[in-house]
Length: 506
Image 1 (cartoon, one colour):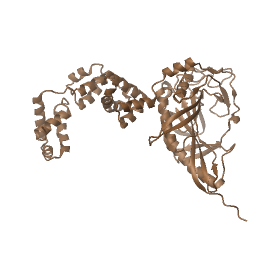
Image 2 (image 1 turned 180 degrees about the horizontal axis):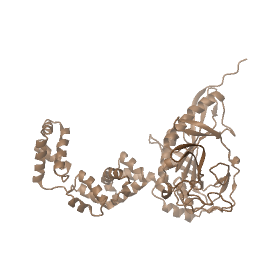
Image 3 (image 1 turned 90 degrees about the vertical axis):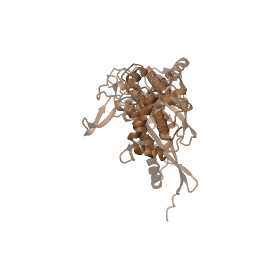
């Protein structure tokens, strides 16, 4: 007697919830005043140098809460429309691992600091999808295991670096509201931008300041009309958007193939964790996932609960920076194009500098003109010097001066670029720098005609092409005029004069 055929898969629907770990950039760690490796001042600390008796879990040590870490967590909670709990508590999450000196992690279990929020995610087609935020709770990070000796030599054992142990860690847990890997990546990118603009983290992915853990399974519609769900697999510690997308897409194929082979369905004890191989582009089984009771949570006896007043929440709300969505809308309303918008929104410090320059130049009406200077000349000089635009040395007021001179036709586009470079190393007024450098546009009509005539004579073929209607050739003559004038003539003015001399203009 043959066994009945298993129903086939008619349709597969992806279900993803996301856990995000955000290392907060406080100066000290979560429960001790030892420096925090997630703060820029300590990025390059040698292994195991940011360790004290509390981090090392020596007998008799006691934790003391970092108030600023709580406040930064509240900021994120408010930005995600969460309710900030009037009272939350600390719990011990018990498990044994080499990078966890105490044998437990101080976390929050049943009374998190932030809960019941949402985030409006704008998809690529312009529609908006609401993503539920179940909770955002504060805890401490673990240490870091490595398998490489200094100099890149491999090591058979595990090397433990406790610099990261005790770092304030905000864990954000979403509802399983994502239905494509693209949605997950978009949300991850937007959340990183949000956290960076709030100033709660540097958000450097390579340093694992943000780590993403998708919980992935499939809802399978079968040929017999039933819907079954595959076991949930949590992909651990992804620190690139490429890895997030790749891991989810791989799991879709893997889980569907596994169900066809085993027919395993989601149920108690069926959840597992997997790692991501960024070279082979596959997920790898790590272990069966513990349920909450396996961690034997209980209230930490060494820490008092966190009590948050309405006044405290109001103070933190007033301290929050402008949210990225609001800032983005403001820039669009001011006429900033998509390309410039992406460049601006990629770096909070650039936005702050840009806004200061716009204010100095007279307000929102100057946004486009300021963007041309900051994002073109400013970015080029910043790249050459290996610093950010904000750290170049040029001030927002000097940017505003360059914009004013350019708008008045007093300097050329080339001179504007040169003045950015000069202003980086001087606190003089831009007017003085331009005058001293001979960069002010010449108003001598006779001199301009002489420069144009010389350029036309030196570029006879280009002149003939222009006379014949090949207008692209005029660029060569304009360049020659600007060079002859050492930048003290505007390209548009020179072009108009060339057209007139060649019989192509009024």
